[in-house]
Length: 400
Ligand SMILES: Cc1cc2nc3c(=O)[nH]c(=O)nc-3n(C[C@H](O)[C@H](O)[C@H](O)COP(=O)(O)OP(=O)(O)OC[C@H]3O[C@@H](n4cnc5c(N)ncnc54)[C@H](O)[C@@H]3O)c2cc1C
Image (cartoon, rainbow, N blue to C red; front, side, top):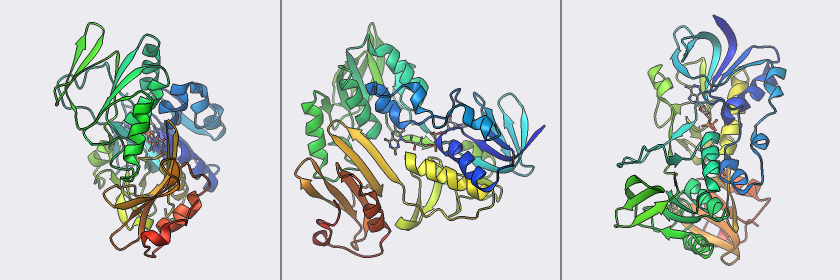
């Protein structure tokens, strides 16, 4: 049986970043990195942006060059799934029945797309957009496609809609809320973004959801609750992800909407850490535990978990940022973008650029959204970390 000082399950961003963290503290220890996908670790954000728009190639989205892992002395097992963790004897089992012994383990298993629980929701032709393979299958069909149905009005649905329209596809996007991104955008901004989508030719269908998907002679038919029949050569669904925490749960680790970790990203087992989309962690600036499904969080948590696996004992008190591009709008954000919080826009140019604030009842800044305002993430972070209470008037003009 192979023995490793460090094992990492999940070769996504958090897993790959953990290698860097481990090597900061320990240049010698043996490292195993196991990933279910066949690909070398890659960044997912370009799947719905640069790749779709032809601004990057598949080769360019790799997190590290292929040679990096060998240079770092990492045993990389791709196309391999870990099926069991035995925390009593520090053992992993993979899908071929092979065992590995670990000293410290990182569970960086990310998340998997939620599926539509409706007839036809599990048809292969419905693309639940998460992996490079999903991009490739969309790309293969793009040349022959003229129409698409996108299900879901969150970031993935909105980005895919924009990307497909820029590829000259006619897109209907259907979602239950009144506005695209309604759960996150300030209430003043959401209608403006929706208008921008319509101006770019998107057929935006709010307040509705699919009830049945069926295969037609040339593509898929999507029936909706409000009685619409939408047709697409392509159907892409982005209705959120669930944390991949079954492996941890089966191992007896504490799990609550993800793998529970402390401020050092350690799970309920002293030899096991978790990081990235699957980690339910204490977000110190917000004073509560939650899960974050963003690139910068996965990267920073993965790296810090790696350092801590090698004995650094650091606290995760970083405030990660988020980014997205939707047609004419470029967003960066920090903190809690929950549109149910008191929120407003401090416009720099009405309807185009400005700063969105999300406030708690006692006037603390929970989240900041920068719309076309660049270089201000640090100021936004400081506000989210601050214990001070602010009025709307105090905040106007503070950033940007
Ligand atoms: C299309 C798309 C666009 C995005 N755009 C943005 C954006 O603009 N901005 C932003 O901030 N974030 C964005 N994100 C989110 C960001 O990519 C994620 O937060 C990040 O990838 C999370 O990294 P992770 O390593 O935690 O998980 P993942 O990237 O999900 O990686 C986990 C890996 O573990 C593997 N795995 C799971 N279980 C096992 C097992 N048992 N054995 C072996 N391997 C296993 C999985 O196959 C996967 O490869 C986007 C995501 C997608 C899908």
